[in-house]
Image (cartoon, rainbow, N blue to C red; front, top):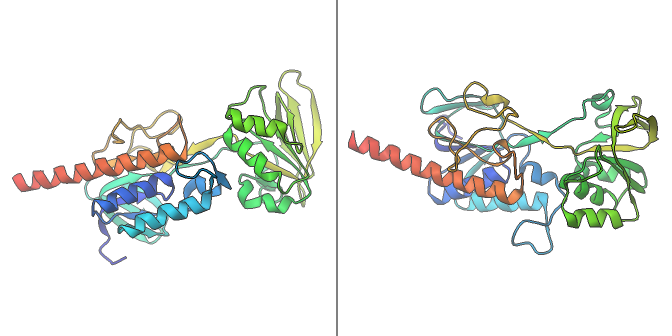
Length: 315
C-alpha cells in the first residue's frame, strides 16, 4: 500500500464473512482492504471438504472455497493484504487499526476475525501440541497414516474430521463427554457405519502423556468416575471455538462469552463499525451464514458511508 493508508472500508479477517464483505464493498466501488490475519480463508480453509455450501453438489475443499472467495473479491477491486491487526482505536473517525505493517485509517471497519479452537486445558495438551495433539485434521491427518487416533468432540466438526482421518489412520476413536451428539444426522450415520470409527461415550480426557511423541491418554468416565489409560498415536480436539474478539474489549459491546453484539444490520454499538461471522455469531457458525453476515455488513457499511456524504453535503 501507499504511505497514506486511509481507506473507506477496512475488513479485519479473510474467512467467508470477511471475503464476502470484500466482494460486496468492492462491487460498490469502495476499494475495500482486507487484512487476512493468520489464516486466509478462515476456519473453513482448515476443513477438507465442505458439503453444505450451496452451489457445490459434490462438495468443495475448504481451501479451494476460500481461494474462490478471494479471487472473486479481488476481481471487483478488493485488496487483500497479508497483515495482522493487533490494536484498534474506535474513539474517533477515521478509525485507527494498528497492524504488523503499521497503521491503517478507515471510515468504516468490518470485523470478521472469526474464532479459534477451544482447548481441553488438561496436563500435557500444550506440551504435546505438534507431537501428537492437533486441532486440524486437514493439516495433520497425513502424519497418522496407519496409526490409531482419538477425536474428541460431538459436533459437526468432530464428525467431519473423524471421517476425514479414516483415509489415513488405521482406527479412529471418537470420545464424547455425553451420550448424545450435536452433529447432523447424515454425519452421525456415516460415522456410525464406518468400520474404522469407534465410540467412547460419557468420557473425558484428563491428561496427555508427555514425551517425544504421544502414546497414551488418561480418561475418566463422567458417570462412574472410573479412570484408565488409552493407547493412541494422535489426539484431535474439536470441542468448539472461542471468538477472536479480545482486541475489542472496552471498545465494543460483547456477550459474556465474548461474541460481539450486533443488531439485524450487523452494526456494533460504535457507528461505522460492523461485525460478521463467528466473531459475532454464537448460534449458527456455518460458512453460508458467515458469508451472508459479511454481505449484510458491507451493504450496511455502504449505506453508512452514503449517509456521511449526505451530511457533509448539507453542512
